[in-house]
Image (cartoon, rainbow, N blue to C red; front, side, top):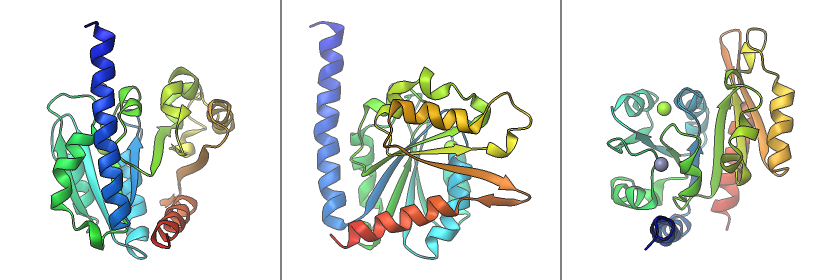
Amino acid sequence: MTKLDVRQDVKALNDLKAAENHGVFDTTGVLVIDMMGSPGAGKTTLLENILPALSAQLKAAVIEGDLATENDALRISKTGVQAIQINTGGGCHLDAGMIALELSKLELDKLDLLIIENVGNLVCPASFALGEDIRMVVLSLAEGDDKPEKYPVAFLHADVAVITKTDLAPYVDADTEKMKRSISSINPDTLIFEASKHGKQYDVKGLVDFLVRRVEEKRSK
Ligand code: MG
Ligand code: ZN
């Protein structure tokens, strides 16, 4: 068997498991987000900032994927939202089997929204479906406005892209509009949101409203 065959088998097996997860999510009516992005893109910070507003309107839970440490799950727990930490022990992405193992810890029937923060990595998480409804890529303006072109696979099937740290525009050599055009050139259907700090306030209203709407749509199915 060649190396490529083995890799395709691993992927096919993951796709099967992801389809099983998706069935469970549909039966229980919970909307599931796979949140991807480089280390330091601001994924956990984004969650800390949207969860209080989301929790006022629905019941959410978070699965945190990291190579090591419980740091991010602890940060999320402080918002009052249930957070489960998966440590991959060096593995650079989550897979559908890892998610399946955690589902018994969640009361899926009572949940509206499950956000899975993938391991910080803009390459292979995009190739491993988890059973999600929405694929979200988080990227910070500081990473450079050509990031989408350099990592097109991550953006090709992204339903949503969130550009964080746009308030750093005066200090970095990157342009928010250029980054948006770069995302749209890879997938014109990707919805783009900005998350930035205006003064001390973190601006995420558009994203929160979108998620609440999608939860309502899934609930009414
Ligand atoms: Mg994180
Ligand atoms: Zn990987």
